[in-house]
Image (cartoon, rainbow, N blue to C red; front, top):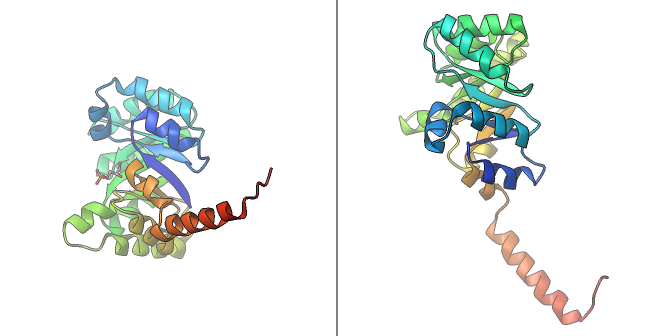
Length: 217
Ligand code: G3P
């Protein structure tokens, strides 16, 4: 499973990327707005910081505008993935990007039918928003399972990028459901390392080791 960070915070990104466990980054207009910095500069810095795919979202709502913006974003670095909304115009743009060899991440997916269309359009990634579905009383993980079934039925290449992740449980459940990737807020990513029994067990191991008076080196 590929693990992406859902962030524009370059310092946190570099810190977590140093683990070697970060496979890419996703951004969105809200995260760019929170950064308070010029989008093109933020995306260029992120692309320098990680080798993997970096999703940068268009702001245009019409196909022509999406294509113009997406081509500009793709020109920033070879690892840019152009993020487009799951709309009629977005999927028409996705098909054209596929013809041009530009990788795409179709975002704001909330139904299996939408995901089916995105795969038919040749999307590189599909981003079903688990947390926002949960927020609306649905079970976001069911959507991952449904998309996995459909994509496997027809051998679609589009990769399922579980998004809108709210907890480490979401990451586990998305992996169990067969998502290819998950994009994770840094705070949740840092939780993935932790378990109270690991901490307690280590504490006990170290206390017992100290009693031996030994040194390995
Ligand atoms: O960036 C895509 C997605 O992960 C954002 O989800 O619900 O945390 O805004 P959310």
